[in-house]
Amino acid sequence: MGSARSLVRSLRRGNVCGVCKEDFPSRSALFKHIKATGHAMLKPAEEAPKGRKKKR
View 1 (cartoon, rainbow, N blue to C red):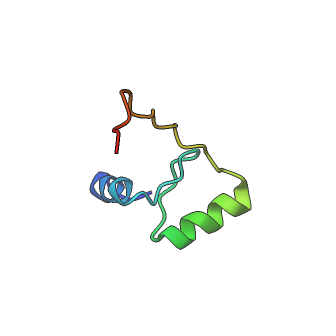
View 2 (view 1 turned 180 degrees about the vertical axis):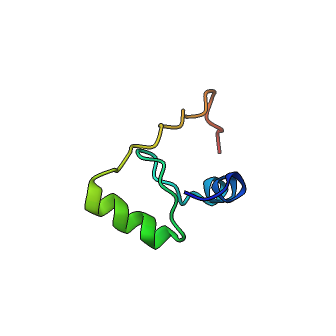
View 3 (view 1 turned 135 degrees about the vertical axis):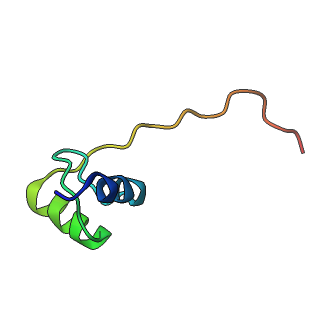
């Protein structure tokens, strides 16, 4: 793993495995890792907006 600065940069880009926290230089490399290791994670579901629907 690299320095703290590179880790922060990669976290912002989203090129870090959510399971093992390994840093990857590209999204393609991250997806290859996920496919090879089975480290896929579910995203947390977003809540639907509450309130009334607008009438047309």
